[in-house]
Image 1 (cartoon, rainbow, N blue to C red):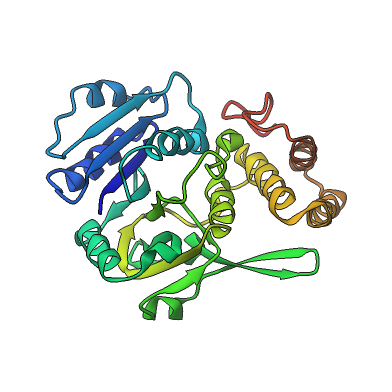
Image 2: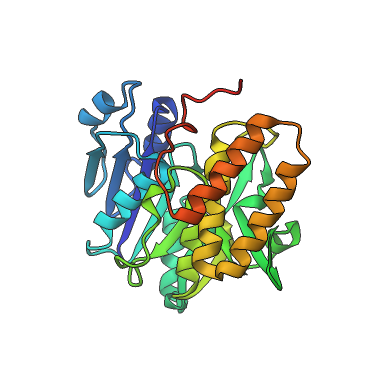
Length: 296
């Protein structure tokens, strides 16, 4: 079987160098694709002089920062037409343990893994399983609950999930096509979850806990920011797309209640703008809520 690896990077040259040092010399990687999202920290110059002991490496420098959604869309749209069986997706700060590509190839060849549209690793954050990266959907009438995976799940050989992040996920290239690529205009947040909802229609999504990826980040609240616009808009848009207008309007109503009882005018304006954008299908980078926006 042939394995491709896709990395999307933006302004994290130190992490990128560390990640590529792990990949260097790994003969289980048949194709490495790096999408540089218009970084301005020296990443372009570093990648232009890249010399890795890997069978085949392609680097794309995007002219603008398209966010994670645009970067993964660009990479997958290119790789879906290559002679690859599986494609592994990774942020530039997600570091695999213990030759997971070798382990993955061995296990896929032993098992009937074509039944799966995607297979995920476990995600380890500062020594503990990060349960939010692998989630379940529980629907009750019009209400959608996203439930994190459980510690006991990782004691199993494998378990099924509904939603994943792009930290350590292998996608079955046999099922990829123009109709089930990521929403390229989500920019950030929930693009991976929406993609999981698409892939669920093609086959099961599994997690193999023995495959581990370290993604050491701070999980505490970073406060309210422009990013919340995209998290809210994209989730609402995905719910409308996959679950219908009833679910969409129910979750809009819940947000309206939050606005109604909130004393935070900035947050209320942002949430209302996200509802409007989701309703009208206005995706992409918002003219107000973007990296230049600051709380007044």
